[in-house]
Image (cartoon, rainbow, N blue to C red; front, side, top):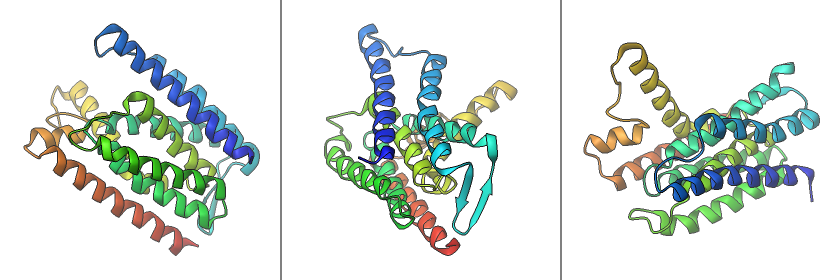
Length: 246
């Protein structure tokens, strides 16, 4: 087995383990209190170091965007850890409505898989295809009204996996586009918290932003469909941009 496959599996396993611990503490305590935010973030950072240093050791510290490349030197592992940790948390924040995280994630993994396959990172492409297949099967039972939920065990793991695949597939910069819906969800929380702390006012009725639309009268099914469609559009644009920059 390719070493990158082991790195992907190890990262996925430990992210899922961190999520499972969080879910277990919530169930055991019979309330919505799992790991502390600091404890969860620390676990994510430590896990993210695995793919970050593997990528730096095997691919160097160069970011690529088609025919363009940028050597960021010692800042690469910092960026890689930020990508994996950020993706993990953003996926977790998106998992707030039945079928939402799964529906938004499928186009993102599809774009990552296509770009990785074309750039010669076959292992990453295979994993992306596997995740898409599993997500489609899961969506049958996770769509509104959901019978099965991924919880933090699934969302932290899938988000961390998406960030890891973007790093090992050498499409770190394009992740901001094909994972754009996750970025928007995370930014809505950051903006909401920042605005409330600085001015005492809220920008949205509730964050993450899918709850804002929910409180504005949009049905759960409509939000899931529109967010999934927008994710597909962003993923399509990321693939097109990749071809343009080749």
